[in-house]
Length: 310
Image (cartoon, rainbow, N blue to C red; front, side):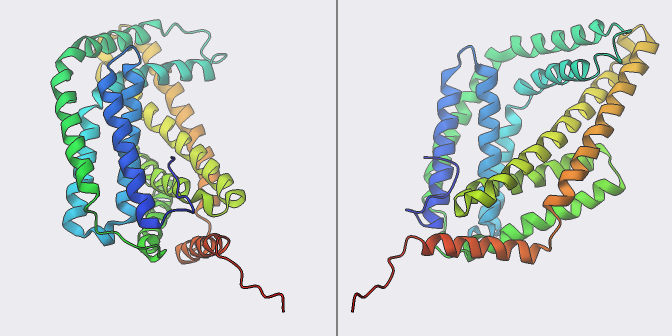
C-alpha cells in the first residue's frame, strides 16, 4: 500500500502494516546487489528511519524496554550501511556546491578536492564484497524483526495511541529549532534535522486525514529537511577537507573552498529558519489537538448517516 494510514484500517493495524512493508522492501533491496546498489542502500537506510518514526509514535504503548530494543536495532542497522552511502553523498554535495556557486568559484580550480573524494569512494566501493556477510546477516535479522512486529502491543483505533508521542515529536523539533537559532553548530543542526524528519514522516503517515491541509505541510517539512540535510552534508564535507588539509598543496584554494562552504551553510540555515518558524509557530498542545480533530472528522466521513424518510 503506502506510507500513510488508510481509512479501511485501524491506527494500530495501519502502523504495523507500514512497518512490515518497509521491512519487506528493505530485505528486497539488500537481496538485489545489482548496479543500483548505492541507491538500494540509500533507500534501505531511509526505510529504517521511517520505521523509527513509527516506533516513536507508539513508544508509550511499546513500553520503555521494547522501544529501546527496537529503536536500537534499526539505528544500528542503518549505521552498518552508512559508509556505503556517505562517500557518494560527499561527492554529490561537492558537485552541488560548485554548481550553486559557479560564478563565484569560476576563478578557482577545485578538481584536486573532487579527485580526493572520488578516490575515497573507490576505496570504499572496492570493499563492497567484504560487506556481503554484513548484508546477509542484516537480511536475516530483518526477517526476525518482522516476526516481532506482530507482537507489538498495539490495538484499536483511538487517536490516543499516538497523541502523546506526536506532541513529543513536535515539541522536540520546536525546542532544538530555537537551539539552532542561538548556536548553529553541526551537532545542533544534525539534531534538528532528525527531529524534522520525525515530524515529516509522521505527517506523511497522517496525510489522508485532510489532504488539502496536510499535503502543504508535508511539502514544507520536506523542504526544511532538505535544507538542513544539505547544511549537514556541507558540515561533513568541511570536516573531511580540514582533516585531510595536509594532502592539498594549495592552501589558498583550501581556504577559499572552506569559505564557500561556510557561505552556503549560512544561506541554507537562513532558509531553514524562515520555513521552520512557520511550521513550529503554534503550541504543541494545539497542534496535536488539530490532528486529533482531523482524525475524528476523517473517520466520521465513512460512518453511515442516520436518515429517516418519515
